[in-house]
Length: 338
Image (spheres, helix red, strand yellow):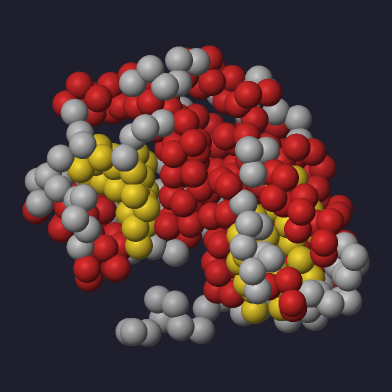
């Protein structure tokens, strides 16, 4: 039997654990600023690559920092002309044993670059490869919140030193109060997610649309949740690219999951919605704007990936129950050599 109940104390513990990294976040960012670096490489694989895509979207809209998001295996295979010993390499591995991340961290260290690492599991191989290490336990269903609650403030602290985010302290003070708001967000969406799961228990294909800092989360939800964890066909589509091919596949009954954030690209999502609702009624919207947050209006958009991830988790767990397919079930991933 798959338990879909929200374990509030467990969830609160993980969120508060991430928020409790503030002193380390500030200290690390301060040291790195004083040390100096030329550029930033966000190096990920699978879910962490997706999350770094969202993180870079926030950074590139508010900073002149040179930053690159790369897939670890491809980075190792072909290299990158902007990478050097003066690069700041930011990585993450929930398990702490991801082979590609271990190899990439070794490569970066050997080149003389600085490695910042977040893992959910202390004492794992990636820990020994980090120059700056964040550890906060999390599992698949809440890793993204922990990831973003560490790395968004970390990046903003670096930007603060450049004069690009002067309200960093206020932002961190306000985000420090977010735990009960995320709990309430999950509760608010729980019934609609249960109903949505019942409706889609036999649906074998979904379009997942996102833009701006939600594009990475659309990519994540299609590949890591629907494909990996539920064996359902899913296609991640950037809202700005929807009208350059994918629109031709929309017809009555087509399921479209829309992940709405609150950054400057929101009108791109509205354009997709206005088109799609002419042809299909199966449109589900997960919108961070629905959720009350303890932050100023100008900060809300930065938190959209956290909020929408919290909401979609409820759909994921209810879907796993009605399909009798636990989110931990795998056929191939980490079960064979490939």
